[in-house]
Length: 169
Image (cartoon, rainbow, N blue to C red; front, side, top):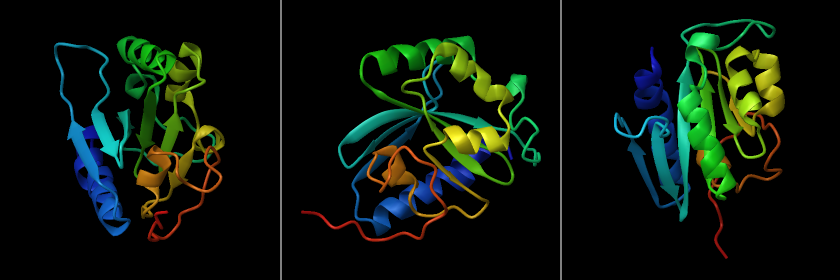
């Protein structure tokens, strides 16, 4: 699997199914933009909350201490500049990192450019510490809620949860 497969086979189907089960309105758009270098791979709007997702995938299964991505799969300078500017302006910008065994959602707000660059050399143990959300191979239904910050204990690493209906007031 590569980054395109990561989106098409794992992430998009999970977000779509979860949003439908949770009765959340959503629009997802994968962006391949050769004009504006650094633009995130995915633009999303879920239940009125909009943001960008930079996808990073490595077809490896490292242990807890080995690098998940490696330098060649990390955020490029143009992506770090875009994310820094978007975050500075108050926008939501996420990095969704995956390998064969797990997926981590990292909130780029509050991260320095050096912190963003260091994601390429982070181990799975380190990613679990900094991730707002993570799961193993079988993805739970809470990724859309993490993206729009409606998870209980938002900002903390959460275990795999089963989808549940969101009650509206």
